[in-house]
Length: 335
Image 1 (cartoon, rainbow, N blue to C red):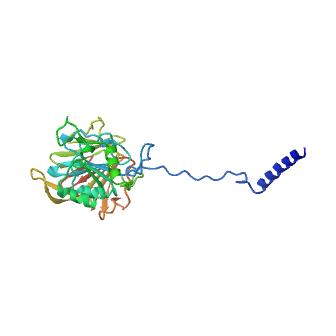
Image 2 (image 1 turned 45 degrees about the vertical axis):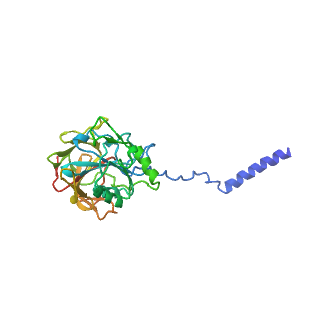
Image 3 (image 1 turned 90 degrees about the vertical axis):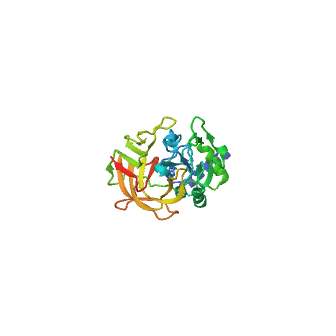
């Protein structure tokens, strides 16, 4: 009986002591820390899904863009695509994959001098391509800070589709090149954001589409579908091997200059260098509207900055972006 009484008194004493000391919170709930912000894909601004790795190195690839190379594969999975000029008034694509993967990408084509400056925007990346003139690949190797994975030096990373004519038939997958690139350099990490993402800028003007012509043989158009910009090339819908129409959340049309590289193709056409360092005019298309301004990049190690006429940063919508590089001879018409 005595032991039971002492036990009850002991329990009561402990309860009183806890109450006097306030316990853990004096009866009030402890404040909780806010949850961490969601991880976002650096090249789209979108919240990453469970199967996306925001810390993964970027993979850039050179993709054929002439009629013999169409339909292409994998472009609908790219975070960013840059359309650049090559010899003969034609264009070629510099497609960047970071959060997304593609089981088939191609046709993979050769590198150009401009790729060095584009790769520097990614602050170290993996670069897949199929061949290059020695004078074209030298600046890429020297200044891009990228792991170079050419078809010529790494044929097992690629395969040919024999139903297509060579050289428009080299394909690979993003996972194949990402693994090979990180095996060569395990210090590679995620690229910095290329753009700012946010609300529609003040002063944006309605725009239902745009048309671009680089030469008599090369043109493209983008039309606002109500949710995305859909692409037409050389007068026909731009449709991929998976039957998806090429589309983008944003289209960025940049006025640039070009330099003569001294490189010529087999029939003597000069291979231009698209200059993406310096400044020029820009038109950003998003949400069915257009914002006019300027682009600026002081040097190779600096990011690209887009500003409107009032000097405010032009924000893009979260999602994929196509960048159209427009040399002096190219025409741009906004509808």
